[in-house]
Each structure stands twice: as structure tokens, then as C-alpha cells.
Length: 94
Image (cartoon, rainbow, N blue to C red; front, side, top):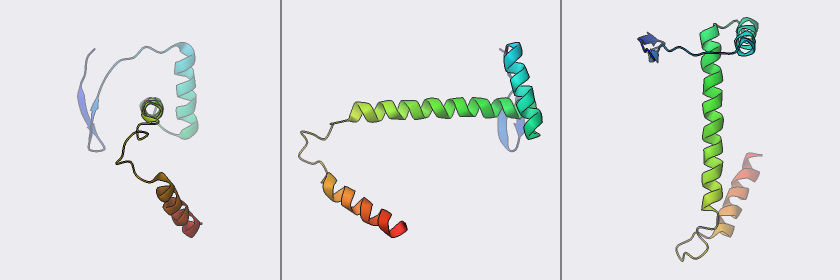
């Protein structure tokens, strides 16, 4: 894989080559045309969305893995009090 460092919008960019199916290429070109953006910008946006989705999935896994971790801990916060404070703040903001 060949990388060429470019500078666009003060953010370093790397040139790379990817192989797309005909359907993927056509869909990205259509999206780019519809939104008035370049093909490359549309592809980067798709990649960013994929990465964000994976990060959210990993966060969900971490939350699930931590479930019950305060159960036998004497230093655990009073969750009822925290919940009540949160609900009070929410009702003020509504």
C-alpha cells in the first residue's frame, strides 16, 4: 500500500487505494453527486460513520462487561442519590 501525505483543511491526509465492487462505487458516486460533495469526501464520510459505529459497539460491550462491578464494593456511590440528583437536573432543564 502506498501512502502520500497530503494537507487538506490543516489535517494530514494519506493517499491510499481501495477496491470497491461496482455496486459500492456506483452508490458512492450517486451519494456524492446528490450531496454535491466529492467522491473522496463521501468515501471518508462513510469510513468515519463505520468507525463511529464500531466505537459505539465497543462502548456498549464495555458497559455490559462492567455491569454489577460495584455490587460488593463498600466504596460504591449511592446510586439512588445519584439518580435523584440527575432526575432533579433533568426536570429543571425540561
